[in-house]
Length: 400
Ligand SMILES: [Zn+2]
Image (cartoon, rainbow, N blue to C red; front, side, top):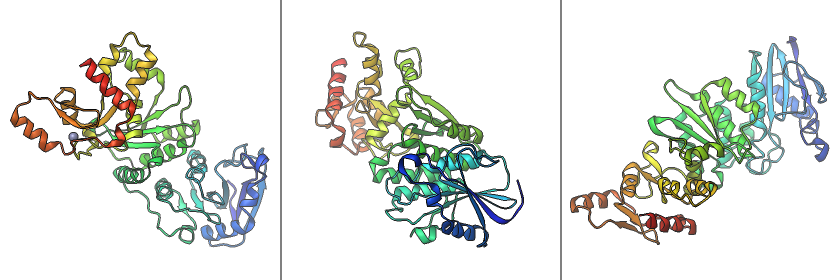
C-alpha cells in the first residue's frame, strides 16, 4: 500500500439501497464528519478524501456498493476501517446490521497494519438500550474501537473478558426482554459451549457477532458449537460470516435443517439430541432453569419431553412430519434438572391439568421426604400451560 503523509479517505458512495432511498453514503460521511474522524484517529485535521463508485476496487475495497457503512482511511502505512452507525439508532437490528459485514472485510484482509473503528453519527433515538450496550461490548471484544462513544453514550463500553462473561451477560439481557431471545448460549454435556442461533433474517447479525466474540475469547480446552437454526432449506449464515468463523478456527458449525431432525426422529439416527427441540424450548421457556427446583447449572438441565420421543416414534399411523412436529414442539417440554427429569421419566412425578405436581402413591416415605425437599415448586407457572402443553400431558397419560 502507498505510504501517505496526509490521511486519505476512500468512501464508496452507494449504499445497498441508495437507488431506492436516495440516501448516499457521501451524504452521511461528509467532510465535516471525516475531519472529526481523522482528528480522533491521527490527531491531524488536514486530510484528503475521495468518494468512489461501485466499480472501484483496491486492496481494501471490493467492487460493490458500500458494504459495512464504511470508510477506509490510509495514513502512513496504517489502514483504518471505520464503520458508521445509522443516523437514527432505533430498531434493535438496524444498529447491528452493518457491523458483521464491516468486521468481515476487516478481518479477511491480510494486510497487517490495520485498525477497526466505529463512529456514532449524530445519535438521536435511543442508542443505549441494554441490548445495544451488549452489542457494543461484543464489538469491543472483537476489536472495534469506539471513536466518539464518550460523547454519544452515557455508559462506558467495556469488552467482555471471558466466554463465561458473555454467557452470563447474555443471560441477564435475554431475561429482561424475551423478544431479544434469538440467540442462546449455554453449556451442554461435558461443559461444551453451545450456541443456538437463528441464521436467517435479522438474527444472523447477532449470531455472527456472538460467534466472533466467543472465538476471540476462546481458551485452551473449551469446545464451542454453533447450532444454526435454519428455516426449511434456508439459510446458513452468510458465506462471508461463515468464512470468518472458519478462519478463526474455534467454533464447530452444525447446520440443523429438517433433514437432520428427520433422521433423528425416524430412528435412523440413534442420538436423541435434537438441537431444534432445545432451541424451541429456549424460545418458549427462556434460559435453562429446572421447572421444579432452583437448579440453573446448564450442564445439569435437560429438555424433558412431555409426550416422550419413544412414544412418538411408535405412532406409526401418523405421518412422519406430524411426529416430527410433536418431537420438536417447544410446548412438548420442560427444562428439568437431571434428578427431576429422571423422576418424571420414571413416573414418580407427573402433573395435573393445572400444572400441579402429582406424586406416585407407592413411593417410599423416606424418598417422599427427599422429593418434597428438593422440589421447591409444586405447581408449574401458568405461562407453561398452553393448550398444546395440556394436550401433550393428556397424551402422556394415555400412553402410560
Ligand atoms: Zn430440579
